[in-house]
Image (cartoon, rainbow, N blue to C red; front, side):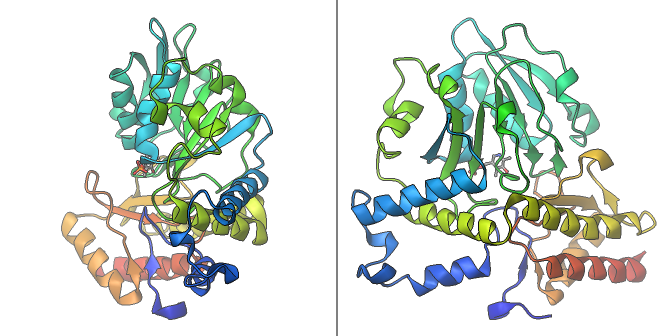
Length: 364
Ligand SMILES: *Cc1c(COP(=O)(O)O)cnc(C)c1O
């Protein structure tokens, strides 16, 4: 089945596929945004027109993600990666310890960055299981008086995902970059959530940080302005020129999520889509092997291996004939990774599953 505009099935892990309707709306308003005579890209960020766009995006995110009133929403820059530094600078005081749960590459990066700032306890490392498991976070041993517990709800590279919102004994700080908005979340279990936009929200350039006022108040008085969460909250979310276009696009995606049925519907679709590919793995008689343990298989990034590197390369190459694009695993782990975020169509998963079956028949 051909896709609109002859587009490929884009399995890229990020930046990734966006809803066609959202791209169309952006295109239709590109030259003259709603009669204002200019593009959103060209507006002063201090103009009322733009401020309304940003405030609407924030309100739509609050609505669709059900962010409680006592949480602030921040549009930051520097990617999820900068949060790896901003978080310990803000919440890991002298003499304190922060706990890090490392279930994959991104958690490891977060932990490494925190060492530059203060004392870190590695509460869990999945290194010995080759980052294929998600432990029960409620039963790990954390440091006494932990400043916070940092974890990664979905490890994008390994395809390892936590399935619940754990109640933790210290502030829960979660990198939700690659599964934010993929399912409903219970905010009473979180203190800070952050996510780069380019996985499930919009184009790269903006990073969403959602933190409780209680966390915000912990920020030390002397913090560099651009690294101080308070500067975002008190300055209209604009300590400097924000990535206006990215925020605008995220706003369109939030509206799209709501229109499509909200997070419950996203979860239903994502589970169904992922199930189609996992089924193809499990019914291949061992030709394909999934990377993640079954109880923590990601519904956003499906990772699996073929019997050899040669076959993996051949698989990626032949898949292109079916417009299956971006399937090569991350360069650090190899294998195949099918990233199937909210906007990725179910037909793409069906096409991949059917290609997998044929490929295994011919090469198994
Ligand atoms: C992509 C990703 C990052 C890095 O995001 P940047 O915006 O490139 O800094 C961090 N954590 C997770 C879980 C990711 O998927």
